[in-house]
Image 1 (cartoon, rainbow, N blue to C red):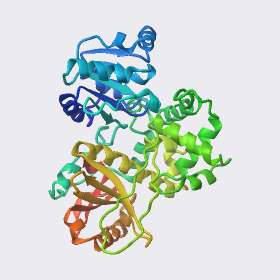
Image 2 (spheres, helix red, strand yellow; image 1 turned 120 degrees about the horizontal axis):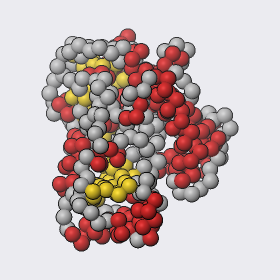
Image 3 (cartoon, rainbow, N blue to C red; image 1 turned 180 degrees about the vertical axis):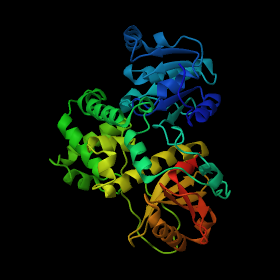
Image 4 (cartoon, rainbow, N blue to C red; image 1 turned 120 degrees about the vertical axis):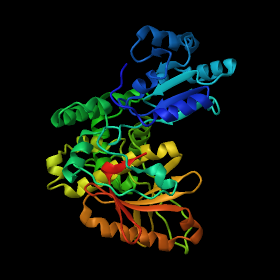
Length: 415
């Protein structure tokens, strides 16, 4: 199958196939896991489409393992025991790059009796970034910044309106060729499937579709904030019980539809209490737009404040993908003195970039002040690992301010 665009995750898949007996691509439905995996596979079995194969796999998972390697087993979680069967075959053969698994939901804990460590590498896959969609140049490379290279000055051709429209459409591969209205409808349909079907199929528990929708709506209202679950629960039109919201959150996590942003714990000069609650994000900002019934016109008018949070969520989403090849994670900083920095990109060896996200260029000074204030609170050792301070907006060329803070557009970011 011919793919529309190359995905950033492909290089990571290649690397993991060299180092492990198999890989598991995880992520929400319709992000392109199967399409990506098929470019690497020599044979395949698609359990969500081949009823006979699914019956065989549920009878004995080993019945569907034979084929040329790498062998793709699509939606492996549909057959109980498939993980252990694949792990066992890898042990028997002792080779690398034997299996490609995809999963749109994580299985029950008791379905995996072995972790698969050193055998099966788990590779998260997300919706497409602006760079993958052809909307960002990639001139400002996260990898290059982590390596200490300066950001090159450059122009851009992106507006606030284009940023909000692009995040409303979302990074779903099937949406790329759709007009705006059709993409908005497709995203609404996606939400309908989640609340009416997927949330029940994930573990067989019959959940109230209306309650799930209200939770998603409340989550969307609090996107890119560190709202507590109790706050999210109270902001629902019909607040569920604490146990119910925890159950819904667990199920949505298993469907990879929630991807919260954890807080950063740097070495500080003084004792300052840091935020403990993560920032809230859905798998793609377009889901928040859809469940709220928003449109770009409303987001650029009476809902402009919400647009700013959605834009931040889009930047966080894209940075997760850009950081992944460089073994880096995405966090945020917030302390009890009122200082917040939206994004910390931190590599496993401790190098980091601090990023403030502002929808409009008129708030660049505010973002720069926050970044410089953060540096003053950190120890010399922590600051020694800093590679860049950056403000990301929608509508700016790339340049470096006299205080050393880089200013750029989301349309310039890349891996």
